Length: 469
Ligand code: SAM
Ligand code: SF4
Image (cartoon, rainbow, N blue to C red; front, side):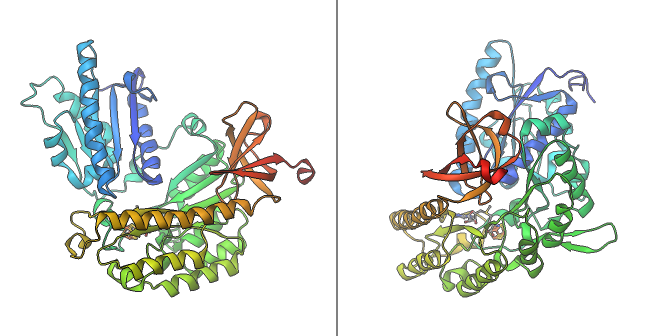
């Protein structure tokens, strides 16, 4: 290590990590913090006191990518102010924009010291050391350190385990990435290019990480993957284990009370996983299962490899296994060639499925994807109008779903103090936020809560002492 690199004893440095995009980026940001901790960097929420700022970026839609460049403009000013006051600050860009744009970021924003993709996080300390070596160079000679390779080695095997205190500080619920990348190549999506091919972590690695999380007090784990139900890990006997079987193994960990997973592809929702929903009470009855469109013509153009009827039949099978399953989805409006009738078909599948929640987006052309070469783009004002109508329908369904909980008693994992004094908050099995009056002693366990009302995005409850008895 060079003399510029901080040592483990020198914990005086601060890193500020700003996370954009999906839960996988949230997980990755924590892993970056874990990788930097032995090198003397402590996380900070105050950007002004940071010695290192990392932007963990998202490339899924154009808006998400462009945000990064406006943030870099602000950071340049902040760096200037710090330097004027005798300090300094290094700047790194990580994540999918870094992977997709690499050199271009350094060219557009020379203020950047490091650019590295999602497969290079374990090499962050080395990259940082190299970048620090350049710090005192003349600006004309200084070059950003860029690492956007897809390495042969297993990144997870090289990332340090989170310190117990760090996990405790992160709370009662945790993400655990079990799978990365995607081989599906939906024609609108950059993920197969930015995250690479589907890779599953070995079963023992996943179980070890889950046990460490539970040992640090985590009660609920959400398994993550761009295509989480495409998980196929190898166990110590060399057997291929799917996501369903992995859930049965995780269910044996004493102290783990809740399990979720996201995001799933309809094609990978196999019998083993559906059976796990039937058999495992800790597997929560909330499933994010995007369909994107209700029109077979558009589903084909999107390369989703299933029809609307197949999706609906799948939902029926899932509900037969777990009748109270709440569903969530993703929708894209205005995919090239989408007609009024195609859009009506999307509204129909939403009506037929009945969602507890859903995310919806206007189609955004992503360079390098097959969709970018399609003609027949849908005008922006039509996309806006369709998005509005779709969101109105979903909002009605969400409101009705919340209202259907009133009068029921639900097990709620109480996780935090509430926004109002004397309140605590948590999540229902269906991932709804629940607020109730109660002492902070309730935090850290699942309590029976009677739902007495709803507000825009959450449920209001009261402790059901009788149910607890
Ligand atoms: N793997 C998941 C699946 O198969 O549905 C989705 C992962 S993607 C990170 C999250 C969501 O972003 C997608 O489900 C899709 O609705 C949306 N999305 C992806 N590419 C998009 C694009 N080019 N324009 C608009 N929305 C997009
Ligand atoms: Fe993107 Fe999901 Fe399709 Fe993979 S399955 S290409 S991540 S939308």
